[in-house]
Image (cartoon, rainbow, N blue to C red):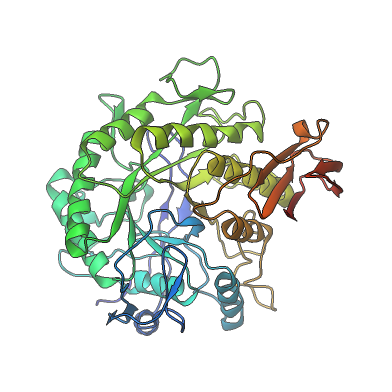
Length: 480
């Protein structure tokens, strides 16, 4: 393996043509020798974590990875997060240890891209591979017991008109899809990734249709994406028939009520989903070589950055979209990303208090679960500063004992993952006082109830026969 690049680049996760990109720094600088040492670490002692949630011992070892002995992987993983540029493998040793202990305490699915968001260009020249930084992230997922997921995006420059041996980390270049003549090369790269990490069983093909918008037709180039998807699907199944693959990871954009721009039949008080996004799912579903799960993402606010009717009621979009897509495809549904807070001109989401932000995020997750989604990945906006709105843990780059500590969103995500995992049967009969119904959101199974105060002031609520106080935007768990 050649030396890791030391440059940095920018990218986002939204569609170029629809103007909703979330820009974030990409690269880290993991040392090659350390990364090689880390990747040789397998799962924690006691056996590999089965994708279905059970523990198993033993199994063959390939590349230092614990081979799944049963060859089975559940298509429904539960609730976890996506690593971005900065994560828990960087920073001071004490902070890293605290962050990894936090992740190990409640193992969740963890997702990592093969290029960008903390990973280097994996194949800067044809056949010349550099997996150092991806090795480091996979090793982190292994050490902390999370079910590892890999998103197969983005593509090396030489596959999309750039020069072999060079990497342009500009947003424009990274957002470019592979050229059709290089679809097979990208599929081959995907196969190399699957061979390198035989314990990884779940793969998402591409990210948000990046580079697949047809400006002349003013719609998604779903034909091109599906060709790429099918080649990748076949390659991954060739590596191991028990690999789990899904797509198309298209953005469920929506317009406000009354707007007829790309209007569709999937609508509610929150607006109407862009018909072009639904067309992309339909085409992919009808022409795919196969799929183990369906992947989408989206925001609760509209294309023109409005909350309809308000930031909490707008999250009902996630439930409505989930029901529709599950019915159409019959596949387990994954939300690869979701967003509830508007970004400013610098693409930062820091306009709300942490309590406000966490409460709306809780409402969004509740809506996705109610709609039948079985897996979701929170896009962790980790940074290196002391202030990190919406982050799961404080930056491991902080000194003085402050780094790697649990933040409110981590507490919510970990508890939600634990209480409402795949197979949860929700109880729709939770008793809520009539006066409280407009002010709270409630989700429950037979063991736990999650209650969210959607008001920016304290309330006294009566839920399931119990009366208690809730602070402004309070989030509370009740045992049943």
